[in-house]
Length: 290
Image 1 (spheres, rainbow, N blue to C red):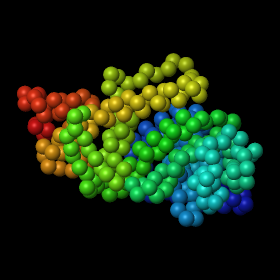
Image 2 (image 1 turned 90 degrees about the vertical axis):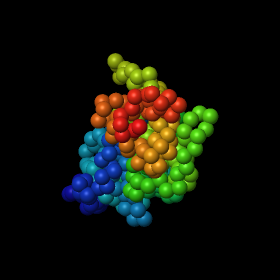
Image 3 (image 1 turned 45 degrees about the horizontal axis):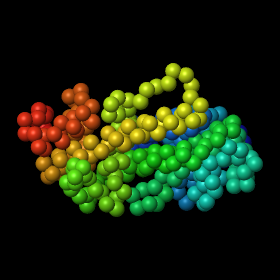
Image 4 (image 1 turned 90 degrees about the horizontal axis):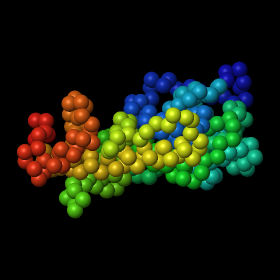
C-alpha cells in the first residue's frame, strides 16, 4: 500500500497493543466470529475521535495488516456507528457505504460490524467481518456477533476490579451481581469457557464437511449455548468461594481457574464440586478451596 499516497495510513507496532488483545479468550471470540460469518477476515477495530485501527486481524487480505491506522471517517465502522445498517452484502451499491475510501482501496464488497462498549456503555471499538465476495449476514448472526463483542469488551477492561459486586444466595444457587459494571465477572467466565471450548455434556461436535451459512450459525449458537449453560455453574462456585474466603468475585474466579488447570480438571467440573461442598462437608476439594 505504500506507493499510493491517495489513501495514506500509519502502522502501529502490534507489540505495543494492550496485552488483553492477545488473551486466548479474544482469540476464541474471533474464531467463533469467523465460524459464524464465514468471511475472509474478522477483526477488532480500535477507534478514537480521528483514527481507526485494525487492532486484531484474523485471516489474510492483500494490503490489510494488523496495526494499520486509517482516518476514522474513511472506515466502514464510522458509518455503522453513525447509524448505517450493521451489514451489507454489496457495499458498492449501498448508499451508506459506497463512498467509503477503504471500500475502494481494499476492494471490500461485504461488511458486518457491531460496537464494542466499555462498562459505562461508551464505544471503545468494533468487532467486524469483511469479504471480497457477497456474503449475506442475517439478524440472528448479528445478534450472536453482539454477544461476542460483549466478551471482547470484558477482556479489554484494564483495571480488573469488580468494586461493588454483591454475592447473594438465590433458589438457583450462589450468584454474582456486578451491578453497573455490566456483569463483568459473568462475561469473563463466559470468555474463559469459550477459550477452553468447555461445555457441560461435552463440547459441540465438529462437522465433517464444510457448513453453509445456516450451519455455521447453528454451530456458533450451539457453542455459545453450551458455554452459557456452563457459566451458570461456574458463577455459583465463584459466589461460594468469594463468601468462604471473603475475597472479590474476580479473585475467586482466578483462584478457581488456576487450581482447575493445575489439577488437570475442567473449571466446570471443579465448580460442581465446590457447589456440592457448601452442603456436603465430605466433598473432596483441593486444599486451597477448602
